[in-house]
Image 1 (tube, rainbow, N blue to C red):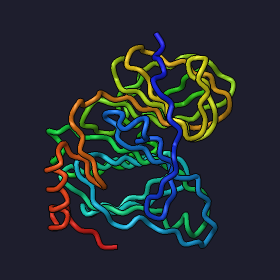
Image 2 (cartoon, helix red, strand yellow; image 1 turned 45 degrees about the horizontal axis):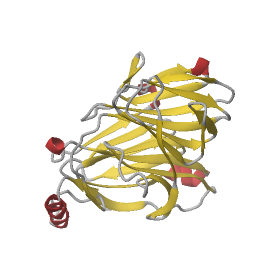
Image 3 (cartoon, rainbow, N blue to C red; image 1 turned 135 degrees about the vertical axis):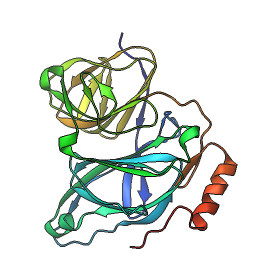
Image 4 (tube, rainbow, N blue to C red; image 1 turned 120 degrees about the vertical axis):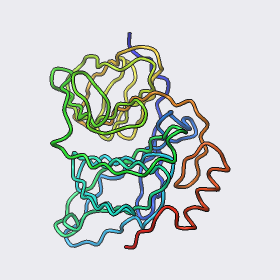
Length: 286
């Protein structure tokens, strides 16, 4: 049985440091998609050769996992654990902020020097209450680590970053059951793709156009939230394009979210701000 479409949200544009990003989650219509909290789509932005691009300055996180999927270009990450990573197109950076981490991010020097395009998604994934104060960790997932699944007679390719989809297993370590996959599609195909029943399932279209379940046309900057019943989704690809596919077990826990922290209570949020001010999440000098 095909999953029903529960809601389709269009992104609003918002500022994140020096960037303007498309934000389909949260919106007034969709405050949370448990366990997924926030989705920011940056770009595509073109850098002229030799242009100076602003980085997002060091800032803290606690209680969730910020995940960066790079579709074009390359990003430099630095953090208070001593990690320094260059994440390129088709690659993913998965941070478990846990008890606290400070990091900065921005285009790599070679992208600024040579010019080119940058496009990425940052997704916030909630951590279960029992794991919000675990040690912070960093995963860098390269193209060669990420398996691919071919669907719709080859018209849709999913690059499975986390979880088990079809016959492949993504390399990311997660703290609750989920599937995350970057996707690319070509026009002119129609068929169904599998989706695990009872999970929260989302599909975000970065670019291109497709029809869902024969009646809902979605295109650039649209996020589709599906009902929990059913084990398949019907897709007709109308143009070439790219997407992000998400499925996760809801945590069904209270969410207290403010600024860079996601906890379960307001008291825990206040403690997070105190701990950051007191240097308990580490430091990072740029």
